[in-house]
Image 1 (cartoon, one colour):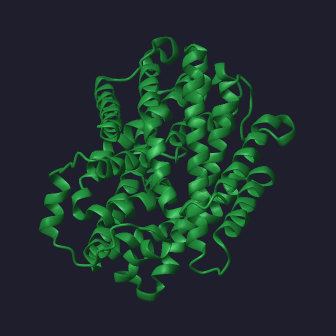
Image 2: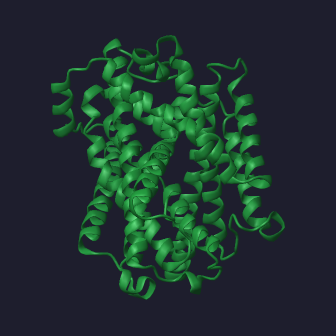
Amino acid sequence: MARDTTGRTGFFRTIGTGIITGAADDDPSAIGTYAAAGARFGFGFLWIAPVLLPMMFVVTYLSAKLGRVYGKGLFAAVRDRYPRWLLWPLMLGAFAGNVIEAAANLGGVGAALNLLVPLPVPALVVIVALLVIGFQLFGSYRLLRRIFRWLTLALFSYVAAAILAHPDWLAVARATLVPRVQFDAAFLSMIVACIGTSLSAYVYTWQSNQEVEEQIDQGRTTAAARRGASSAELARSRRDVFVGMIFANLILYFIILSTATTLHPQGILHVDSAAQAAQALEPLAGSAAKLLFVLGVVGVGFLAVPVMTTGAAYDLVQGVGAKGDLHARIGEAKLFYGVIALVTTVAVGLNFLGFNPMKALVWSGIVQGFSVPPLLCVMLLMCNDRGMMGDRVNRRTTNILGGVTTAATFAATGSLVYTWFS
């Protein structure tokens, strides 16, 4: 997030950073989920984008605010504030969600690369994982980000592809503004998957800890030194998060629209392969659609997988009360980096169980969807705790938005469970 400039230069820096951050937020799991939603339900799922936008903003902002004001990452804060009987289920749920989503994202990158590289998907997963873990242990996530972040801009090709497919814009507007909900397992599963992949637990963990890492960069090496935040700092956080989520939501919307316009009318209701997902780009790129698809998925995959594996390490290390962060060397934080290596290994191993990579992307979103409501509820409570936040507790508007988001996510997951047993 851009925080080092103000005024006109800061505005343009924020816009540029927001485009990249927003595109990177749509990881392979998100791409697969949104593509599947558009193919299965057509225009009938477009309303999810404007509904999710305020949710995406409030979740990311609350996590950023917690790390910025309290000076600790999410689960370090939960450990300080709540009893172990609540900490451990929350932490293990988030940890498991990160592992599953990392596995699904590695599989998604492997499936995309398989469109151009004639190697088995599991072999490509191993290669990708080795590159990612190499950067994390012996290089730098910042270097990885500099290399791959511009590839994420290939996702904007979904915007052009959707427009060039010439949808019925009146029908598009009506479907966007008037929600139509089907109370059956398939439709509700897709809603939960979209919630899970847009509001994933790794977003909470990563955002809060990145605020901490940024303050450590500024020389605030202790939690006491990091405690508190100025109004200007929180305003920059809100601005950066808002810009990033606008672009993430834009990509979300046009992935659904492009597949709803191209795949759904052809009767392709299930996205079972990367090749089918790439077909949505054919109105723009023709025979080069596969290349555009691969560039986008590889770009966001190489950005997202380290976030998930590192997020899992933050979860576990902070949950047990140990120390570890990206500023520490391997010898100084053996548990932290050991968990990163273990999570990456497990995520690779899951790809050898024979699951369809594209379907796994959707199911990982559903798993994450069930971890969203309780974590969001706890985070909302902490951001209203004066003992933790001082005079930077939430304003009424943030609480209303956070409360509605929490209630909506509980309602979506609860309705899905009801359809399973009814």
